[in-house]
Image 1 (cartoon, rainbow, N blue to C red):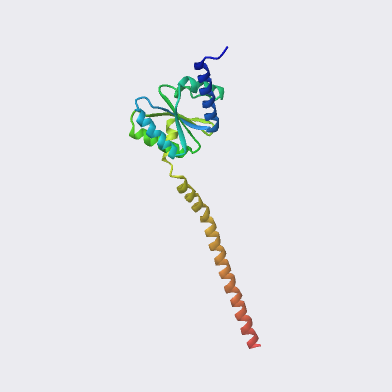
Image 2: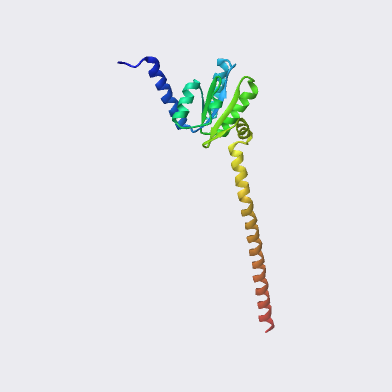
Length: 180
């Protein structure tokens, strides 16, 4: 007997959701209740700019997928009209979602799963407050260069001192040969 269309559709949805969770282990769970469809489309465009994807999901499907993947503790976040932001760049995604929440009062961030840990809304806001990746890399490089520059300065002074000492020894020897 053939499987009913509704059941096969749900199985397919579950499989696709599990693939999404596997391919993008970091995600942010939101509640979009009260947003117009044009606002959700706008959010999706912003998320694509941040190399992320935003999906509206059925709570039951999300719960099944998370249970199948043995991700626990996210049940509280899966209430209401749930949308999930899948990402490989948590900082940019957090910035996009936090900025969107500031301009759309109905949009709420419920929680996140980052680096294998359940995170709360405050953590997402902390990540959103970080400077861009390029700025962070510049800071790290400047901190790494500081000791090297100091070491080069010390070596330069030692070499200058050594050159002066060799010069003085040379002058004394030349002066001693003239006298002798």
